[in-house]
Length: 339
Ligand code: AHG
Ligand code: MN
Ligand code: MN
Image 1 (cartoon, rainbow, N blue to C red):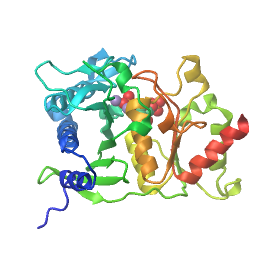
Image 2 (image 1 turned 60 degrees about the horizontal axis):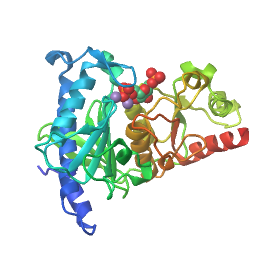
Image 3 (image 1 turned 180 degrees about the vertical axis):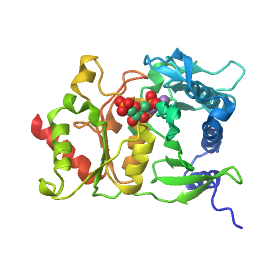
């Protein structure tokens, strides 16, 4: 029996083709992969090991944390803080930059992550995942990294990826040279390359949006969805499917595999709370946009390319519209026409 290409082998091969690479990046990705394997295991054992249900705490966004949010955050930190590859970490579940304990060396990378995306799905045995993004620490940054050091647009990402804990555990990542997918082989405990060079179909028949908020949407989003719903009899002259998993990772993974568009737009209700969308720019929107663009798709707020947004805070939110090129272009044009 042959094993196939492991994710570590793949990253080493990719790094060999680049000048001035020390192996530090490969070692960092390796630790991220181990953290995701540990989270995958905790998610899989669920009630058997008492990890489901709600913790007694809220996170910085005021959301009630699940026990698995806290467990996944801690697993990610413990695995990545000691080796000397990162200088600091930041996550959805922590209000401020996480500074490494003094005994550990500081590396040249910054690691940003959503330890468990779609965590409300843990109540119903639905798909969840982990999203991460790797940035370089700015050259002029001295001492302990500050929040400002993290505030880099998506175009500065060195690597972005996600682990999807579905019927099988998958890891999908990009270092800016296309997108590759790996499936966890439980027998040997390694992610194996199963989906090389993933590309999003340009045309699509699926859209993914929480239609419960329809009455709050802006006219361009309403127009797009109305036209999809009108099907063959409408201006699009074809029928569409709608899907909503409640975990961005699961919905975006479907879009990546089969084509389609994922929308979590801004709306009247979010604006009334002074929010620009719901999803977080640094650890949800930017990494997923990097992956989608590298697979040939587009990612926009409706009016701006997400990868160019300059973050002003670690937990900044933004509207997200991403997926098949032709569909996203159409939605952007509807926004332009409405201006
Ligand atoms: P998280 O569990 O990390 O807070 O993220 C949940 C996000 C995203 O994954 C999902 O697409 C969206 O929230 C669902 O929001 P609604 O409940 O408003 O549909
Ligand atoms: Mn999330
Ligand atoms: Mn989360």
